[in-house]
Length: 121
Image 1: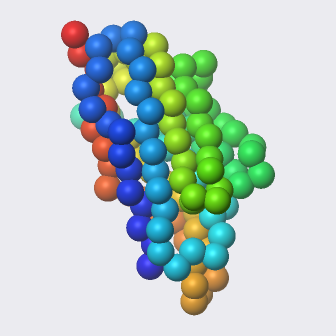
Image 2 (image 1 turned 135 degrees about the vertical axis):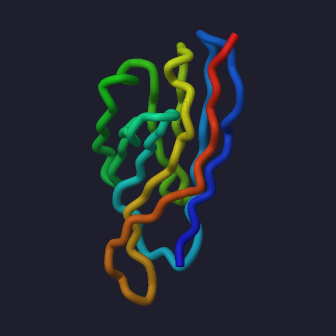
C-alpha cells in the first residue's frame, strides 16, 4: 500500500506564488515518475508537470515557464513551485506517482487526494 500526501495548497492573489509538496509513504521499493495534475471545475484533468527519477521533466503547455517541478528522492517527495499565478490556475492539484512497492514490485499508479489552489483578488 502506498499513500501520497499533498500539502501547500491555499488561496493566493494573481501574480503570487505557491509551492506544493507531495510525500509518498508505504512499502516503497522505488518511485519512477512523479507528477502533478490539476482539474478545474467543469474541465478535464490535465498534466501540470512530470519528473522521472532520472530527472527528465515534462511541463504542461498551459503552465510552461511558470512552474518548476523538483524531487527529493531520499524523502520520496516531489515539489511544485508555481509563480505568476493567474485565476485560470485555480483548480484541485493532484499528485501522481508510479511506484514499485513490496510485495508485488509491479509498477502501479497512485494518486493523492488533491489540494485546492485558488487564485483570486
